[in-house]
Image 1 (cartoon, each protein chain N blue to C red):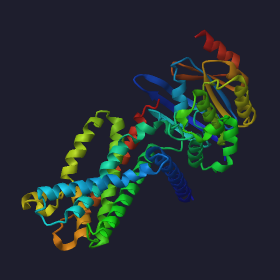
Image 2: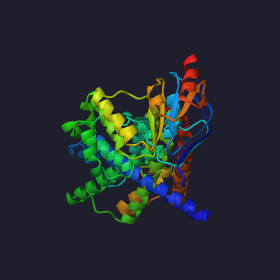
Image 3: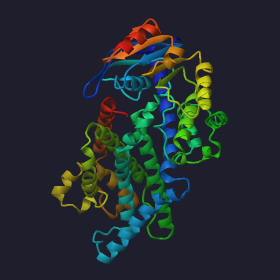
Image 4: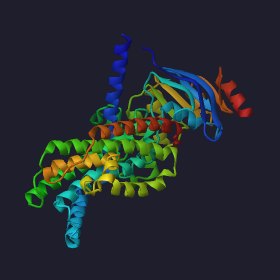
Length: 213
Length: 265
Protein backbone atom coordinates (compact mmCIF):
# COMPACT_ATOMS: atom_id res chain seq x y z
CA UNK A 1 0.00 0.00 0.00
CA UNK A 2 1.41 3.36 -0.97
CA UNK A 3 2.10 5.84 1.77
CA UNK A 4 1.11 9.46 1.38
CA UNK A 5 -0.63 12.46 2.89
CA UNK A 6 -2.98 14.31 0.60
CA UNK A 7 -4.47 17.75 1.18
CA UNK A 8 -7.35 18.51 -1.14
CA UNK A 9 -8.66 22.04 -1.55
CA UNK A 10 -7.81 22.95 2.04
CA UNK A 11 -8.82 26.41 3.19
CA UNK A 12 -8.61 27.92 6.63
CA UNK A 13 -10.37 31.02 7.89
CA UNK A 14 -9.85 32.60 11.25
CA UNK A 15 -10.98 36.22 11.30
CA UNK A 16 -9.47 36.41 7.82
CA UNK A 17 -8.59 33.79 5.23
CA UNK A 18 -5.24 32.25 6.17
CA UNK A 19 -4.94 29.40 3.69
CA UNK A 20 -6.71 29.30 0.35
CA UNK A 21 -7.49 26.15 -1.65
CA UNK A 22 -4.31 24.27 -0.92
CA UNK A 23 -3.64 21.02 -2.76
CA UNK A 24 -0.59 19.08 -1.71
CA UNK A 25 0.38 15.44 -1.93
CA UNK A 26 3.27 14.35 0.27
CA UNK A 27 4.63 11.04 -0.95
CA UNK A 28 6.76 8.77 1.19
CA UNK A 29 10.32 10.03 0.99
CA UNK A 30 9.45 13.55 -0.12
CA UNK A 31 11.41 16.32 1.56
CA UNK A 32 9.04 19.23 1.38
CA UNK A 33 10.44 22.71 2.06
CA UNK A 34 7.98 25.57 2.48
CA UNK A 35 9.23 29.14 2.68
CA UNK A 36 6.93 31.73 4.21
CA UNK A 37 7.09 35.04 5.99
CA UNK A 38 5.92 35.40 9.56
CA UNK A 39 2.15 35.31 9.58
CA UNK A 40 1.92 33.67 6.18
CA UNK A 41 0.09 30.65 7.63
CA UNK A 42 3.06 28.27 7.85
CA UNK A 43 2.26 27.12 11.37
CA UNK A 44 -1.43 26.82 10.57
CA UNK A 45 -0.56 24.51 7.67
CA UNK A 46 1.62 22.36 9.93
CA UNK A 47 -1.19 22.20 12.51
CA UNK A 48 -3.64 21.09 9.85
CA UNK A 49 -1.30 18.35 8.60
CA UNK A 50 -0.69 17.16 12.18
CA UNK A 51 -4.43 17.11 12.90
CA UNK A 52 -4.41 19.68 15.70
CA UNK A 53 -6.60 21.92 13.55
CA UNK A 54 -9.41 20.93 11.23
CA UNK A 55 -9.53 22.94 8.00
CA UNK A 56 -12.55 25.17 7.45
CA UNK A 57 -13.09 23.47 4.10
CA UNK A 58 -11.29 20.69 2.25
CA UNK A 59 -9.89 17.31 3.25
CA UNK A 60 -6.73 15.84 4.68
CA UNK A 61 -6.21 12.19 3.81
CA UNK A 62 -3.50 10.47 5.82
CA UNK A 63 -2.12 7.17 4.61
CA UNK A 64 1.07 7.30 6.63
CA UNK A 65 2.11 7.93 10.19
CA UNK A 66 2.61 11.65 10.69
CA UNK A 67 4.57 13.08 13.62
CA UNK A 68 3.57 15.95 15.85
CA UNK A 69 5.57 19.13 15.09
CA UNK A 70 9.12 18.26 15.96
CA UNK A 71 10.48 19.35 19.34
CA UNK A 72 7.06 20.74 20.26
CA UNK A 73 6.90 21.32 24.02
CA UNK A 74 3.29 22.34 24.49
CA UNK A 75 2.21 18.86 25.52
CA UNK A 76 4.42 18.79 28.59
CA UNK A 77 2.66 18.83 31.90
CA UNK A 78 4.75 20.52 34.60
CA UNK A 79 4.15 17.92 37.29
CA UNK A 80 5.08 15.01 35.03
CA UNK A 81 8.67 13.83 34.90
CA UNK A 82 10.65 13.25 31.74
CA UNK A 83 9.97 9.55 32.15
CA UNK A 84 6.21 10.13 32.59
CA UNK A 85 6.18 12.12 29.37
CA UNK A 86 8.05 9.35 27.60
CA UNK A 87 5.58 6.76 28.87
CA UNK A 88 2.63 8.86 27.75
CA UNK A 89 4.00 9.42 24.26
CA UNK A 90 4.89 5.73 23.88
CA UNK A 91 1.46 4.63 25.07
CA UNK A 92 -0.48 6.74 22.62
CA UNK A 93 1.71 5.61 19.72
CA UNK A 94 1.69 1.98 20.82
CA UNK A 95 5.42 1.66 21.46
CA UNK A 96 7.01 -0.18 24.38
CA UNK A 97 8.47 2.62 26.47
CA UNK A 98 11.08 0.37 28.08
CA UNK A 99 12.79 0.06 24.71
CA UNK A 100 13.04 3.83 24.40
CA UNK A 101 14.24 4.83 27.87
CA UNK A 102 17.93 4.42 27.16
CA UNK A 103 17.78 6.34 23.93
CA UNK A 104 15.75 9.25 25.30
CA UNK A 105 17.83 9.46 28.46
CA UNK A 106 21.15 9.53 26.71
CA UNK A 107 20.01 11.70 23.83
CA UNK A 108 18.36 14.33 26.02
CA UNK A 109 21.37 14.39 28.37
CA UNK A 110 19.08 15.01 31.32
CA UNK A 111 20.84 12.72 33.78
CA UNK A 112 18.84 12.31 36.98
CA UNK A 113 16.56 15.15 35.93
CA UNK A 114 14.88 12.58 33.70
CA UNK A 115 13.12 11.42 36.88
CA UNK A 116 12.18 14.92 38.05
CA UNK A 117 9.11 17.01 37.15
CA UNK A 118 9.44 18.95 33.93
CA UNK A 119 8.66 22.19 35.79
CA UNK A 120 12.11 21.99 37.37
CA UNK A 121 13.80 21.95 33.94
CA UNK A 122 15.58 24.81 32.24
CA UNK A 123 14.30 25.78 28.81
CA UNK A 124 17.27 24.02 27.23
CA UNK A 125 16.46 20.80 29.08
CA UNK A 126 12.84 20.97 27.97
CA UNK A 127 13.91 21.47 24.39
CA UNK A 128 16.30 18.52 24.56
CA UNK A 129 13.62 16.26 26.04
CA UNK A 130 11.10 17.37 23.42
CA UNK A 131 13.54 16.67 20.62
CA UNK A 132 14.51 13.28 22.02
CA UNK A 133 10.85 12.24 22.35
CA UNK A 134 10.09 13.39 18.81
CA UNK A 135 12.70 11.17 17.29
CA UNK A 136 12.19 8.23 19.66
CA UNK A 137 8.93 7.40 17.92
CA UNK A 138 9.23 6.08 14.41
CA UNK A 139 7.09 8.07 11.96
CA UNK A 140 6.80 8.01 8.19
CA UNK A 141 6.58 11.76 7.98
CA UNK A 142 8.15 14.35 10.27
CA UNK A 143 6.71 17.82 10.59
CA UNK A 144 9.19 20.56 11.37
CA UNK A 145 7.99 24.07 12.16
CA UNK A 146 11.12 26.26 11.90
CA UNK A 147 14.31 24.52 12.82
CA UNK A 148 14.88 25.66 16.35
CA UNK A 149 18.42 25.65 17.51
CA UNK A 150 18.36 23.60 20.67
CA UNK A 151 21.24 23.67 23.08
CA UNK A 152 24.81 24.20 22.00
CA UNK A 153 26.21 23.55 18.55
CA UNK A 154 27.31 20.06 19.55
CA UNK A 155 23.76 19.09 20.51
CA UNK A 156 22.54 20.82 17.38
CA UNK A 157 24.78 18.61 15.26
CA UNK A 158 23.57 15.55 17.10
CA UNK A 159 19.95 16.39 16.26
CA UNK A 160 20.83 17.00 12.65
CA UNK A 161 22.60 13.68 12.32
CA UNK A 162 19.83 11.76 14.07
CA UNK A 163 17.15 13.34 11.93
CA UNK A 164 18.51 13.91 8.45
CA UNK A 165 20.93 11.02 8.32
CA UNK A 166 19.29 8.52 10.64
CA UNK A 167 15.87 9.01 9.06
CA UNK A 168 16.83 10.05 5.59
CA UNK A 169 14.43 7.68 3.84
CA UNK A 170 11.43 9.29 5.60
CA UNK A 171 9.27 12.21 4.54
CA UNK A 172 9.86 15.65 5.96
CA UNK A 173 7.81 18.81 5.86
CA UNK A 174 9.91 21.79 6.86
CA UNK A 175 8.36 25.24 7.09
CA UNK A 176 10.67 28.15 7.71
CA UNK A 177 11.37 31.77 6.93
CA UNK A 178 15.06 30.95 6.55
CA UNK A 179 16.59 29.19 3.58
CA UNK A 180 19.36 27.12 5.13
CA UNK A 181 17.76 23.76 5.99
CA UNK A 182 15.32 23.87 3.12
CA UNK A 183 18.11 24.39 0.66
CA UNK A 184 20.23 21.70 2.23
CA UNK A 185 17.74 18.89 2.84
CA UNK A 186 14.65 19.33 0.68
CA UNK A 187 13.84 18.05 -2.76
CA UNK A 188 10.52 19.80 -3.29
CA UNK A 189 10.29 23.55 -2.83
CA UNK A 190 7.28 25.71 -2.05
CA UNK A 191 6.48 29.28 -1.11
CA UNK A 192 3.44 30.13 0.98
CA UNK A 193 2.30 33.48 -0.34
CA UNK A 194 -1.01 35.27 0.32
CA UNK A 195 -2.57 32.03 1.48
CA UNK A 196 -1.59 30.14 -1.66
CA UNK A 197 0.95 27.33 -1.80
CA UNK A 198 3.14 27.72 -4.88
CA UNK A 199 5.51 24.96 -6.02
CA UNK A 200 8.80 25.69 -7.77
CA UNK A 201 11.03 23.30 -9.65
CA UNK A 202 14.20 24.29 -7.81
CA UNK A 203 15.29 25.91 -4.61
CA UNK A 204 16.76 28.83 -6.51
CA UNK A 205 13.55 29.72 -8.30
CA UNK A 206 11.58 29.38 -5.04
CA UNK A 207 14.08 31.54 -3.23
CA UNK A 208 14.11 34.11 -6.01
CA UNK A 209 10.33 34.44 -5.82
CA UNK A 210 10.34 34.49 -2.01
CA UNK A 211 13.10 37.04 -1.59
CA UNK A 212 11.68 39.48 -4.12
CA UNK A 213 8.24 39.58 -2.48
CA UNK B 1 -15.51 -7.13 0.85
CA UNK B 2 -16.08 -3.45 1.24
CA UNK B 3 -18.01 -4.07 4.42
CA UNK B 4 -15.25 -6.15 6.01
CA UNK B 5 -12.74 -3.42 5.27
CA UNK B 6 -14.96 -0.77 6.83
CA UNK B 7 -15.47 -2.94 9.88
CA UNK B 8 -11.74 -3.54 10.31
CA UNK B 9 -11.17 0.20 10.04
CA UNK B 10 -13.72 0.89 12.77
CA UNK B 11 -12.17 -1.78 15.02
CA UNK B 12 -8.68 -0.33 14.44
CA UNK B 13 -9.94 3.16 15.25
CA UNK B 14 -11.63 1.88 18.38
CA UNK B 15 -8.44 0.19 19.55
CA UNK B 16 -6.45 3.38 19.05
CA UNK B 17 -9.10 5.25 21.02
CA UNK B 18 -8.91 2.78 23.93
CA UNK B 19 -5.12 3.08 23.95
CA UNK B 20 -5.19 6.88 23.92
CA UNK B 21 -7.84 7.03 26.64
CA UNK B 22 -5.83 4.67 28.85
CA UNK B 23 -2.69 6.76 28.37
CA UNK B 24 -4.62 9.94 29.17
CA UNK B 25 -6.09 8.41 32.33
CA UNK B 26 -2.67 7.28 33.58
CA UNK B 27 -1.29 10.74 32.83
CA UNK B 28 -4.18 12.49 34.53
CA UNK B 29 -3.87 10.35 37.66
CA UNK B 30 -0.34 11.65 38.22
CA UNK B 31 -1.14 15.28 37.48
CA UNK B 32 -4.30 15.34 39.53
CA UNK B 33 -3.48 13.20 42.53
CA UNK B 34 0.22 13.85 42.69
CA UNK B 35 2.93 11.33 43.36
CA UNK B 36 2.11 10.82 47.01
CA UNK B 37 -1.10 8.88 47.40
CA UNK B 38 -2.52 11.47 49.78
CA UNK B 39 -4.06 13.20 46.80
CA UNK B 40 -6.18 10.17 46.06
CA UNK B 41 -7.34 10.07 49.67
CA UNK B 42 -9.28 13.31 49.16
CA UNK B 43 -11.60 11.50 46.80
CA UNK B 44 -12.81 9.54 49.82
CA UNK B 45 -12.49 12.25 52.43
CA UNK B 46 -14.57 14.81 50.60
CA UNK B 47 -17.86 12.83 50.49
CA UNK B 48 -17.06 11.44 53.94
CA UNK B 49 -16.79 14.95 55.41
CA UNK B 50 -19.93 16.10 53.62
CA UNK B 51 -22.11 13.20 54.71
CA UNK B 52 -20.93 13.37 58.30
CA UNK B 53 -21.34 17.15 58.41
CA UNK B 54 -24.85 17.09 56.96
CA UNK B 55 -25.88 14.21 59.20
CA UNK B 56 -24.85 16.18 62.28
CA UNK B 57 -26.56 19.33 61.00
CA UNK B 58 -29.80 17.57 60.12
CA UNK B 59 -29.84 15.86 63.48
CA UNK B 60 -29.39 19.16 65.33
CA UNK B 61 -32.07 20.88 63.21
CA UNK B 62 -34.26 17.80 63.57
CA UNK B 63 -34.81 17.91 59.83
CA UNK B 64 -35.69 14.31 59.46
CA UNK B 65 -39.44 14.31 59.14
CA UNK B 66 -39.61 11.94 56.17
CA UNK B 67 -38.50 8.79 57.88
CA UNK B 68 -35.28 8.20 55.94
CA UNK B 69 -32.10 7.29 57.81
CA UNK B 70 -30.25 10.57 57.37
CA UNK B 71 -26.68 9.36 56.95
CA UNK B 72 -27.56 6.86 54.24
CA UNK B 73 -29.87 9.33 52.50
CA UNK B 74 -27.17 11.99 52.35
CA UNK B 75 -24.44 9.53 51.36
CA UNK B 76 -26.47 8.16 48.46
CA UNK B 77 -27.70 11.56 47.28
CA UNK B 78 -24.38 13.34 47.52
CA UNK B 79 -22.29 10.55 45.98
CA UNK B 80 -24.59 9.95 43.03
CA UNK B 81 -24.83 13.70 42.42
CA UNK B 82 -21.04 13.84 42.07
CA UNK B 83 -21.33 11.59 39.03
CA UNK B 84 -22.59 14.50 36.97
CA UNK B 85 -21.36 17.48 39.04
CA UNK B 86 -17.72 16.46 38.80
CA UNK B 87 -17.88 15.47 35.15
CA UNK B 88 -19.26 18.90 34.23
CA UNK B 89 -16.47 20.67 36.07
CA UNK B 90 -13.69 18.44 34.75
CA UNK B 91 -14.91 18.06 31.20
CA UNK B 92 -15.56 21.76 30.89
CA UNK B 93 -11.87 22.57 30.69
CA UNK B 94 -10.77 19.10 29.51
CA UNK B 95 -10.07 20.39 26.03
CA UNK B 96 -8.68 23.84 26.78
CA UNK B 97 -6.35 22.44 29.45
CA UNK B 98 -5.06 19.69 27.17
CA UNK B 99 -5.43 21.12 23.70
CA UNK B 100 -1.68 20.93 23.09
CA UNK B 101 -2.12 17.14 23.08
CA UNK B 102 -4.22 17.47 19.92
CA UNK B 103 -0.95 17.94 18.05
CA UNK B 104 -0.69 14.17 18.32
CA UNK B 105 -2.88 13.05 15.47
CA UNK B 106 -4.10 10.02 17.45
CA UNK B 107 -5.56 12.23 20.19
CA UNK B 108 -9.08 13.55 19.55
CA UNK B 109 -11.14 16.00 21.66
CA UNK B 110 -13.55 13.21 22.57
CA UNK B 111 -10.66 11.22 24.10
CA UNK B 112 -9.89 14.13 26.42
CA UNK B 113 -13.49 14.26 27.64
CA UNK B 114 -14.02 10.51 27.95
CA UNK B 115 -10.75 9.93 29.82
CA UNK B 116 -11.71 12.53 32.41
CA UNK B 117 -15.18 11.08 32.66
CA UNK B 118 -13.89 7.54 33.24
CA UNK B 119 -11.45 8.73 35.88
CA UNK B 120 -14.19 10.67 37.61
CA UNK B 121 -16.61 7.76 37.41
CA UNK B 122 -14.06 5.38 38.89
CA UNK B 123 -13.06 7.67 41.74
CA UNK B 124 -16.63 8.62 42.71
CA UNK B 125 -17.78 4.98 42.51
CA UNK B 126 -14.82 3.67 44.50
CA UNK B 127 -15.34 6.32 47.15
CA UNK B 128 -19.05 5.49 47.36
CA UNK B 129 -18.49 1.74 47.68
CA UNK B 130 -15.72 2.26 50.20
CA UNK B 131 -17.78 4.63 52.35
CA UNK B 132 -20.81 2.29 52.19
CA UNK B 133 -18.71 -0.59 53.46
CA UNK B 134 -17.16 1.51 56.23
CA UNK B 135 -20.52 2.97 57.29
CA UNK B 136 -22.17 -0.46 57.28
CA UNK B 137 -19.31 -1.89 59.31
CA UNK B 138 -19.64 1.00 61.81
CA UNK B 139 -23.40 0.47 61.98
CA UNK B 140 -24.09 3.99 60.65
CA UNK B 141 -26.20 2.68 57.77
CA UNK B 142 -27.98 -0.55 56.95
CA UNK B 143 -26.88 -2.85 54.10
CA UNK B 144 -28.66 -2.09 50.81
CA UNK B 145 -32.06 -3.58 50.11
CA UNK B 146 -31.44 -4.49 46.44
CA UNK B 147 -28.11 -3.91 44.69
CA UNK B 148 -29.69 -4.30 41.27
CA UNK B 149 -31.63 -1.03 41.55
CA UNK B 150 -28.58 0.79 42.86
CA UNK B 151 -26.48 -0.36 39.91
CA UNK B 152 -29.14 0.58 37.34
CA UNK B 153 -29.61 4.02 38.89
CA UNK B 154 -25.89 4.53 39.29
CA UNK B 155 -25.14 3.77 35.64
CA UNK B 156 -28.00 5.92 34.39
CA UNK B 157 -26.68 8.76 36.53
CA UNK B 158 -23.13 8.24 35.23
CA UNK B 159 -24.38 8.15 31.65
CA UNK B 160 -26.20 11.41 32.26
CA UNK B 161 -22.89 12.82 33.54
CA UNK B 162 -21.09 11.65 30.40
CA UNK B 163 -23.70 13.23 28.12
CA UNK B 164 -23.58 16.47 30.07
CA UNK B 165 -19.77 16.38 30.03
CA UNK B 166 -19.64 15.97 26.24
CA UNK B 167 -22.18 18.76 25.82
CA UNK B 168 -20.41 21.20 28.10
CA UNK B 169 -16.99 20.41 26.65
CA UNK B 170 -18.35 21.31 23.22
CA UNK B 171 -20.23 24.38 24.43
CA UNK B 172 -17.13 25.68 26.21
CA UNK B 173 -15.36 25.83 22.84
CA UNK B 174 -18.29 27.15 20.85
CA UNK B 175 -19.39 29.84 23.32
CA UNK B 176 -16.91 31.18 25.83
CA UNK B 177 -19.73 32.76 27.82
CA UNK B 178 -20.93 29.31 28.90
CA UNK B 179 -18.20 29.27 31.54
CA UNK B 180 -20.05 31.96 33.49
CA UNK B 181 -23.25 29.92 33.67
CA UNK B 182 -21.71 26.69 34.89
CA UNK B 183 -21.74 27.52 38.58
CA UNK B 184 -25.33 28.75 38.58
CA UNK B 185 -26.51 25.83 36.45
CA UNK B 186 -24.76 23.26 38.61
CA UNK B 187 -26.13 24.75 41.81
CA UNK B 188 -29.73 25.08 40.66
CA UNK B 189 -29.78 21.70 38.98
CA UNK B 190 -28.18 20.15 42.06
CA UNK B 191 -31.23 21.28 44.08
CA UNK B 192 -33.69 20.08 41.42
CA UNK B 193 -31.82 16.89 40.51
CA UNK B 194 -33.52 14.61 43.01
CA UNK B 195 -30.38 13.87 44.98
CA UNK B 196 -31.60 15.83 48.00
CA UNK B 197 -35.32 15.00 48.00
CA UNK B 198 -37.56 12.05 47.23
CA UNK B 199 -40.40 12.33 44.72
CA UNK B 200 -42.72 11.09 47.45
CA UNK B 201 -42.26 14.36 49.37
CA UNK B 202 -43.62 16.45 46.53
CA UNK B 203 -47.28 17.45 46.23
CA UNK B 204 -48.95 15.11 43.67
CA UNK B 205 -49.55 17.83 41.08
CA UNK B 206 -45.86 18.78 41.10
CA UNK B 207 -44.72 15.19 41.29
CA UNK B 208 -46.45 14.52 38.00
CA UNK B 209 -44.04 16.88 36.23
CA UNK B 210 -40.99 16.22 38.39
CA UNK B 211 -40.07 13.09 36.44
CA UNK B 212 -39.22 15.31 33.48
CA UNK B 213 -36.01 15.79 35.45
CA UNK B 214 -34.15 12.68 34.27
CA UNK B 215 -31.86 12.52 37.28
CA UNK B 216 -34.83 12.13 39.62
CA UNK B 217 -35.52 8.71 38.13
CA UNK B 218 -31.87 7.74 38.60
CA UNK B 219 -31.79 9.00 42.19
CA UNK B 220 -35.07 7.27 43.03
CA UNK B 221 -33.75 3.96 41.68
CA UNK B 222 -30.61 4.24 43.79
CA UNK B 223 -32.65 5.15 46.86
CA UNK B 224 -35.05 2.30 46.29
CA UNK B 225 -32.13 -0.10 46.00
CA UNK B 226 -30.74 1.31 49.21
CA UNK B 227 -33.87 1.59 51.39
CA UNK B 228 -36.45 -0.68 49.80
CA UNK B 229 -40.08 -0.34 50.77
CA UNK B 230 -39.81 2.33 53.43
CA UNK B 231 -40.95 4.79 50.76
CA UNK B 232 -42.70 4.81 47.38
CA UNK B 233 -40.23 5.39 44.54
CA UNK B 234 -41.30 7.19 41.37
CA UNK B 235 -39.29 6.56 38.23
CA UNK B 236 -39.44 6.40 34.44
CA UNK B 237 -36.46 4.41 33.18
CA UNK B 238 -37.40 4.68 29.50
CA UNK B 239 -37.50 8.46 29.73
CA UNK B 240 -34.14 8.57 31.50
CA UNK B 241 -32.53 6.34 28.86
CA UNK B 242 -33.94 8.36 25.95
CA UNK B 243 -32.91 11.62 27.60
CA UNK B 244 -29.35 10.33 28.10
CA UNK B 245 -29.20 9.06 24.54
CA UNK B 246 -30.31 12.39 23.09
CA UNK B 247 -27.92 14.26 25.37
CA UNK B 248 -25.00 12.03 24.35
CA UNK B 249 -25.70 12.27 20.62
CA UNK B 250 -26.12 16.04 20.86
CA UNK B 251 -22.87 16.29 22.81
CA UNK B 252 -20.99 14.13 20.28
CA UNK B 253 -22.35 16.15 17.38
CA UNK B 254 -21.48 19.50 18.94
CA UNK B 255 -18.02 18.26 19.90
CA UNK B 256 -17.42 17.42 16.26
CA UNK B 257 -18.56 20.88 15.23
CA UNK B 258 -16.40 22.39 17.97
CA UNK B 259 -13.25 20.67 16.71
CA UNK B 260 -13.54 22.78 13.56
CA UNK B 261 -13.76 25.97 15.62
CA UNK B 262 -10.87 25.12 17.89
CA UNK B 263 -7.97 27.55 17.73
CA UNK B 264 -4.89 25.72 18.94
CA UNK B 265 -1.94 27.95 19.79
